[in-house]
Image (cartoon, rainbow, N blue to C red; front, top):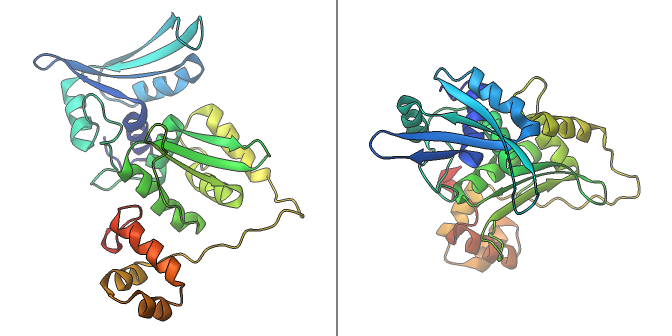
Length: 266
């Protein structure tokens, strides 16, 4: 699995979010991905470009949400394949808070699209605005999406776990969503068909003439963050940076509490 290849980078992101790596006794175990029957085509794509024996099976069962739920499951048992995935960063068992972007070279936008296809949403809000979002329990994943999206859209996000279930809900709307989706869901890419259709539709949205454009915040640079961390005088540094004391105090708190990336991590 060469993660510089777009299809493998996408598949790995999808597996980190929606795959399950089970470890049995000895060398036994398996990887499974279960999706709604409407998405079975993606599982066959995974099976097709995985050079190990694997299978796709269908089943109908009752769930808490429906009397009859028709799903498809891709199963891969090869020890060699499972070991490779585990080395790349797909943990055995519960993994939601542990996953992180690969530590080797990889195709970034394809990897992120895999995460969003598995654990995110693309479409329109109730009022009719384009949006793209990702729900994750991983701080590393949340921070990486924010960093990538900042470079594409110029919009900065601060990640915070919600109080109800301790996950991050990261969302971009309007022109920022259009720009990010256009980058991630490029023509001919591997993706869930239904999300690709929604992604393509976002390009047609235009801001109504009477909709006010919110003033874009001035993003913090790594150099400014470093100066802020090294200063002992919040009044002096705020004047030097041309920012308010409140803004500097808030940024300093976010840096010290790992709510944003430290300068050396960018």
